[in-house]
Length: 159
Image (cartoon, rainbow, N blue to C red; front, side, top):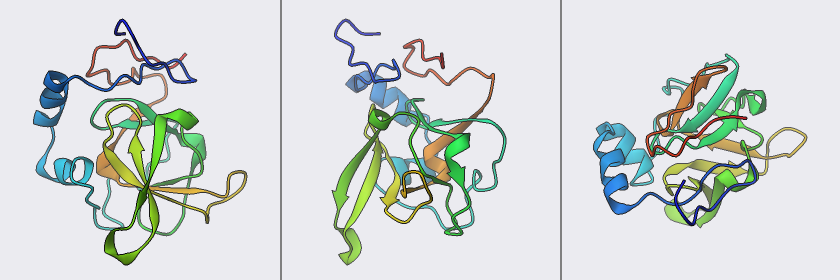
């Protein structure tokens, strides 16, 4: 952790990457990952590699490795993108008003690196009634028991 680390409620360092760290992380992205994560793109529906993932584990940010969603909150929405009814921790996902394409939506971004993840809608299941509709390329699935990705070398671990 950095000297003035900003800790999440789950104990993760939310301090944004430095410019050299960000350049290193972005250099590792595919063209499609960069289009979605950095330029607020959307992958085609029913094409994402994590849509059918059903194993226990967590879904971490593809860019910085912050855990964003737990497998227990994933559900089949029929929309063509992985959907979750709650984030890993409330302060790991940030909502930003999005008025692109003539619509008013809430864009979801990683709280640590500010990468685009998808959108959240008020039509999900109980208990939250929210549907976090997330691009597969924005996430990295980590099977239960496997170490989290830690590209920023912050000692990220699930307690």
